[in-house]
Image (cartoon, rainbow, N blue to C red):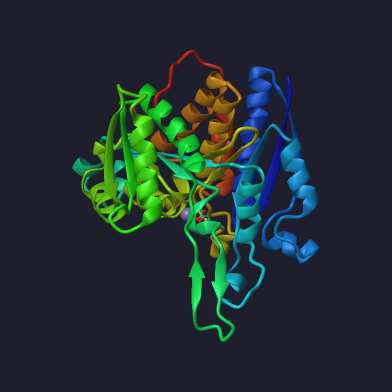
Length: 362
Ligand code: IPM
Ligand code: MN
């Protein structure tokens, strides 16, 4: 089977971390006798420089025709510091999500035993964290109508959701909860927002057909506090686009580095795999970026292809790098290892073994 993979490195550290994922995939091809076909395409600020558009038509076409997309990162300082900019690199990522209808962003957050001391939170609080955020990705305030008054002093962003948009991700989240610890937490602001009340009504109704899954509803402000006080109370978190964006960054605090967490953004026909983190332009070209979020996103892509053994082999190699402390300085301040070295180490340790690997076991 020849699978087509679109490689969208994007901006900042994106291309550097993605290059490590490609090394790992080449090792998977050799070890497990697969053949992947890679196509690179520009997106983000870099695409704006060459084509004027953050998501060139050719890139979108390539993504549509691929079996999966591996995404690096997006964003550049010159736009962050310029609120007047009419076109922004982030629009490339948002358009890609919308055009491909990647409506569910799946963001697993698990503590890694060997890195437990890395978190600013106490060990006893975070030790059993194993949750997954299902963030709605193509609706809500991100995509609602935006207005700015003629004199530029009043602006608005509409947060709109349909029952259908809520229900399709709710089903995915309930199905995931069924296979996990059977608890689903809906995070909303139903005491204030009409759109949140529709979420609550729709999700509660759908919950009746998943009677073995316990449904809990929390307001976003309380959920954020609970995530810091007792993250192990969560199994599956289901939430809208904006709240999901914020909660997932909070999740990276539990882990202690934003360089470790992967994402799968899925729809009915396409799937994209991307690290949580941004483009970190200050680190570009310095060989200090952590490639693990990208490599773990690649493992999620392999799972998506039904290649569980292959995904396990990648995750085992990542785990070995933790145990042997072959990590970048964001994880271990005294580390002298760079992006390339960590990528090479993980690549070399991708082997076909019977070991049934679980990231939560030592
Ligand atoms: C994320 C990022 C994006 C988002 C940005 C880069 C537009 O923060 O994937 O979480 O807000 O969705
Ligand atoms: Mn984010």
